[in-house]
Image (cartoon, rainbow, N blue to C red; front, top):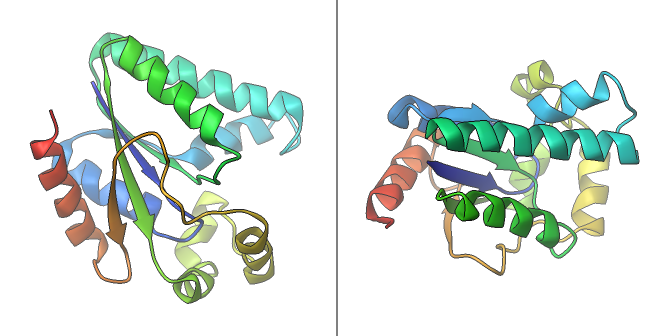
Length: 177
């Protein structure tokens, strides 16, 4: 089982690239809002019960995918160093059960994020759609650093369209042990 851990700031193109990658690989997509939306149906976002349910859902899905040898593409907004423990826990969980984590960071200019955040395509998935909120997040959190404890393929989504990005990831996967 491979877990392609696709991370980057909001509006970097994670879900769009994940869907393009899924078409090329057959991997299933576990996008972050799928878990958040389910938890938010019961608990207020940002509360301890919300966070715990998202965590439990993620690990239950990973456990079952590992049992079935089903490769996944997971999307994640990574904020350094705040999310380090959580991402390390995911990596350790997968690798301890014989799986492989492949980290891919999507990046683009902050101006591009601010342009994309209001795109209509984001509405159907209940994603962040507010420029002011994104600006605040970009100031409050470090969203452009790679995870420090694993090698990451870095892709600039200003330079590559989603299909090209997915093709670059496939090439990277083929070279991964």
